[in-house]
Image (cartoon, rainbow, N blue to C red):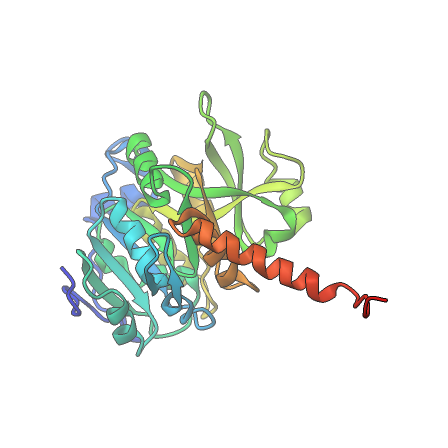
Length: 334
């Protein structure tokens, strides 16, 4: 439980602490995508942990911005994200933060019924490296992963994170949430290509993963039959991942020659090695890092909240005032 303090916290400095690794036999099996003669995706997937990355140098303050939630309470974006994880039934959460940011994130999470672990990304080595910093926390378990600079709003009774957890546990494999996104937004997201799973409306078997593809690359490699023209399946910001991803990220880091490590290449390799699905969620994601991103997310929350009518009335009033101010002065009556 977190009541202004954190339990089980840890810190990653410039030199990594010893990593809890699978046994030699299991490690070889995971890297090859198989466990004791079975595909890793066929092994039982049970998700009890979550990792939230919040160490991006240009986006580290976004999770600490205040926003009015659908319940009418003002709270940090981080708290909304943590409550999303709790609704998925997960109580053990790791936050990957920049050095010096722990105290601020600790305050934002105070009072939640969860066990928080903090890990610092000592060097800005990229998104994939930030996730890799949580490998001791993950150990040999499957886990839920969320980015902290997005806001997630479910469109039904089941939260976005819970939908991903249920899909991963049902299919016993890694699952990434996706959203059909028009090609003009491709510079902001990783995207996947593949084919729809037979008998399912929202599940896709992932065949290709590209990080922020150009429209030409997307047209060549990421077309998914059944999507509207000019739309592609882009990452939502929520993933349920098997422990194999950490080994793939380690290999990516070794080969990076000091360059930033992205997550998408390791996800592409994961798709080649084991069963990996995309789930088109009943929900929407809002990127807080783009222009008017926080404003758009706030408006979306308000439309889902109990003060919806009041907010709509205020918007109508603002628009009416603008129209009245734009009307030409008719002058005095004759």
